[in-house]
Image (cartoon, rainbow, N blue to C red; front, top):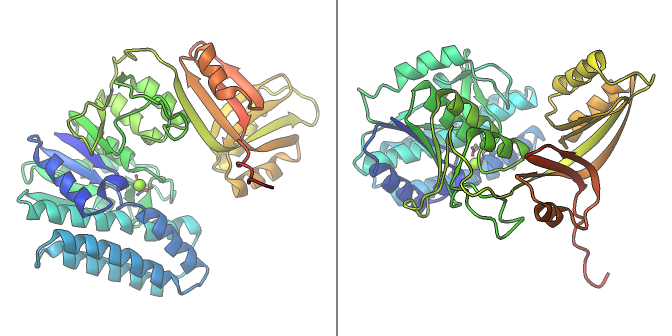
Length: 426
Ligand code: ASP
Ligand code: MG
């Protein structure tokens, strides 16, 4: 069997879903189709949640807009009497009811209860349309099978529990084609959880691994994995074939095309990942697999914006080693801060992290008793794999470099974020 994953951009309107159906109908193998929320629905649901938490009743208008969007896509696709249409109405009513009656709990929990609806709606419509197109597609509520702990908004999958449920639920002797949600899961107690923004790729990889798929294909609006973000470097070109290691390095450094957690489950079972373009399904795309080499070794550029560079120095001038190191990193972990780069010297430690300001502030307070911590905000992390002198000049010239780290294959720079373009005439 194979796993196909369609992201929000590929299912943003009725045309996208017709295209999805065409791509799916051309595949003869048994299949699981993993779908994200339509277009920017996750962002829109975040806004509903925000208003609701503020006690602002205009959250209902925001939700009505999301409803109209889904209803119009469904009405465009379905002839009357498709049961998915009714399912959408029931599901929206359920969320409205929840928002009327639920008490505010903690943010991450509320987030998952509300935002997880986006994937439930998109998959109901996609499955309904596939059935209407004559395919025997079965809709699966993944919250009951992909079981996680209760780390809401960044839930950890409970592997054994999930695997046995997944194997029972996705029974290909019952149906050749299943449609299910990316990004969401559920606790043993039946509460919705989410796996982190853009987490649908990760879901696809988890299901592929648990079901021993032959491959995973992620359908995107770009021609594959590129050697840079074309919004940054417009002459970016497609990578034909890369190794799991290369892909992990790229996504960890900030390449946004696939979610960083996606590669590990695939690597562990040696399942290839295809990144393909849904606008031109016959185009080659990129293959990520174990024995791949970069066919043409070219520099790969990755940029991670919105970073903070924190410099930590022990107040008593002791070395940053052993106990000190483990204590500092424990504080990062406790505060849920992801570390993107570390550079140590005898009595100082530089750490580059995502600028999640509220978390960083607590961290700085925690460090304060034993360490002096200085930080530079508005910085970004630039990574070049397979670097050349020209590649380095290209991205650093005219930039203020605060830190540089070099290995044989990779060079990384922490630079000050480009100032906003000054207004003319000012
Ligand atoms: N819909 C979710 C998001 O936008 C998950 C995903 O797209 O992968 O973050
Ligand atoms: Mg998305």
